[in-house]
Length: 304
Image (cartoon, rainbow, N blue to C red; front, side):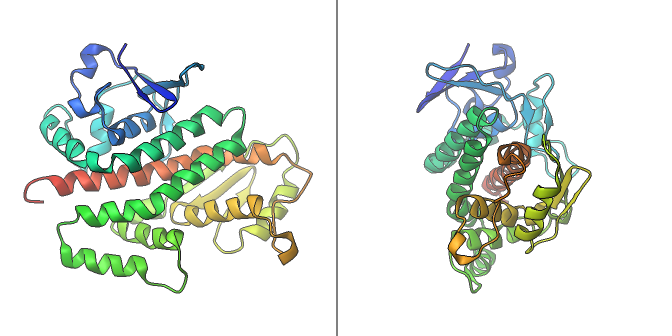
């Protein structure tokens, strides 16, 4: 079994040696780059554990909308990650180009290592401690919020267009990296209206009646459109960033003395709420991670 240790985690290959040999070297354990390993974890192709812990088996592909169980693993799933438009990407035929991209992009290994670590922590805590798991998703967002727009700008070959994009990122009355990230997402997905308008249908699994949660949500989520009906929370991709930030602020930063609306009801288990929303938030983060890697790859191709 091929593996790689990064920090407190040991990542283990799920592919047979024969299947793994079909992958670019930069995506194989133990030589996979942090970026490539992150993508494969989000594809559900890698098991991992803490140095002395229980093996964590994700078995879910988060690099698609909506996320879905992986079933049997297949190296062709990696090709789907890099497919553009209607054309199917052949991972075997493009081994050299993939290796060139991931190898060249090693200089950003620190960013991807941090995000990989936080998402690994998410998986380690989601079942037993979903509130803790949510904090690791938010830490992933914090790492991505400033660095990913910079990665986008560095990969662009349209310098004039990139300068205009950066002006969009930095414009606006509100300061801070999350405002910056919001504008970045608008630019990154500006040609993918179907992704921006995609509606997550979050199954809220609560052991208590939902009326109290709905009252809290009505008070807290007043700044963007959403819907809760029949135990389903519906929210569009383009509104998840605000949903993510407000959920974090109104649970962890209550500011009771300032009259803020918060998750304050004692009539439902907030842990069950986080357990319900977390996989969808991860799905949203994963699509962004995939998008920036795919953009970087195609920008690296000669003549692109």
